[in-house]
Length: 263
Image 1 (cartoon, helix red, strand yellow):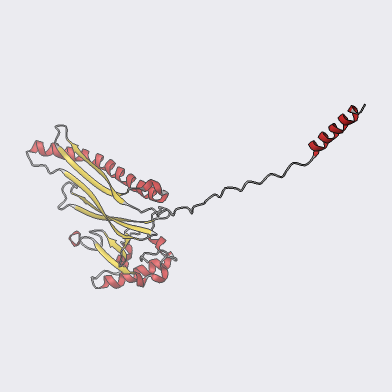
Image 2 (image 1 turned 180 degrees about the vertical axis):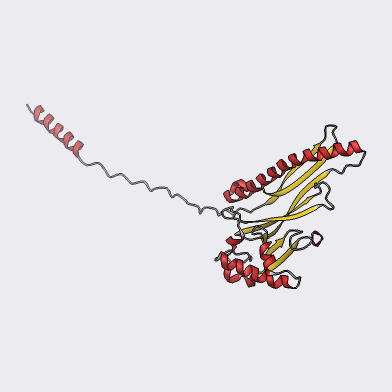
């Protein structure tokens, strides 16, 4: 008869043991994660190079009647910056446009060659070329001057030489007009004409003539100042060549909307 109470007691002890709280487990120490400071990326460098558009045009007999060689600015890493890509695309379009015009002119060259052949005269092949130079580059902008040469004017007494230029905002890729260089375009234009009048007086150029022949795209920036130029055969006879007037930044500083002077 004692066996039953003993069994009940043993069962009670086992039940109480099962309900007893478990021994607390030690919390594992989290592993330390080391964070390294991000490496600083060096700013991209604008690397200039050339994009060339060249072609020889021939007559039916294979004789070269016209050769062109247009060299425009290019940017080696243009795809890295949208503004740089925009500048590269601008000059690529210019190069293709020049080639298209040359193709049309080559037809006239071929006609002149045929006439020369029929008359037993010598034929001088047409030729055109373009080169460029950077006149100023800062963190904010760049000014580029292009020189164009052509001997492709039939019957002309001399070859043609012209100059063109562009100034670009390097943050947007936009080409700047003369008015964009001034906080007040009207005041800026008046100041430019005032300075041109002073510089042109010694050569006999009146303000009226300087203003009448002023082309808002014929300017560029240099280390010395804002340069205004006039194509040959505008202010003076062709033999006088290209005429340039450098307007010092000191005389324009209070009106400038750009920062052409490197810091």
